[in-house]
Image (cartoon, rainbow, N blue to C red; front, side, top):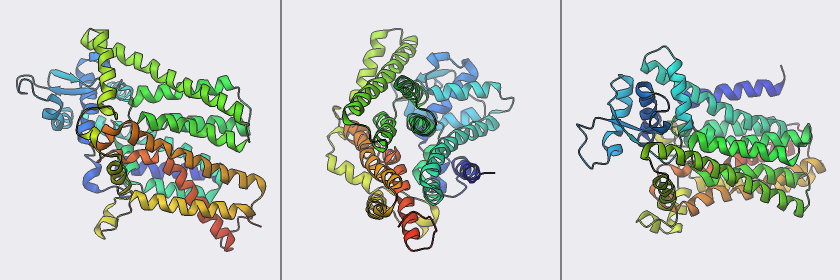
Length: 439
């Protein structure tokens, strides 16, 4: 069995155990099982609704089940009943009324609903199986990424990237959540990474075929978890294009032309999926105009153009809060009051980025080009999280308990490779790791 295959199998198992059960205790124990229950209830509510009324009832949209005789008139239904969705589903005591959430298609929940329809078990067992499937998909997504790291940057870089991903509190929490279905957010990034690697190393693909993969991956992302962190997902999708264009020394004019085509393709994919959501909303409201207006207002109330207190938070405060987030909030570190802020982690990436740049001068030309390409792409990828904080300012200010995950889309994932590559080059320079790269 090849080293790569062994690494991929071990990576999958390590990540699966973390996503499914927090086996490595990367996240705080009290946070793991009930992480963001306010959003998770929409997933459980949809799955429960599918069991009683059918997978595509209420347009297949997410939502919460409630007893109309109990919930007060004109109440915020979601807020009133979100804690009841899990116990109601697990005990198969599902109320008859349903309040839809119209901001995303909920494709991941339609998929989970179909699976639960097939399973011949009670709801408590089904619930665990659905979490198992979700953990498998999340682990598979990151394993594919780590396989790319292994093939291009070697064993040490891949192992360090694996350890940092596995020990990330935020990746672990989001990777476990049925609602967030983290794997879906990375479909465009991982797809383009693998497609362009194939085109670079195996068989040159036409521009049309590459753009088709881009279109399908962006469309799939929007179907499966909507427009959650959409700006970061779109920037992530073009990062592999930047990587391979720089690596292959593509001239500026053809690069800009293809980049423009890729950007348009991604936007068209999002627009087409929005049309799909409009049809879903129309099936519930009975009006296309109501559906279109809802889409427009959904954007404005989450972006910098919103007119509420959160939208008026200064950007300096928002950036400061997200830089001071705890990147590795585990039980072990917490008991010793150790806090590793994102600012510290980013600083480590920058320092080791300098190390990689300096030590790459002694490498052969191909390896040197690869490392410089990594540094350039990582720098550009920092636009992804910043785009979310800036464009979707209201959401960022209103979700200081959630939006740290955008640091990993894909900026810190590439940062983890830089850390691994830096450590690898240092060990090689000291003669502790015979990599045979530095002269």
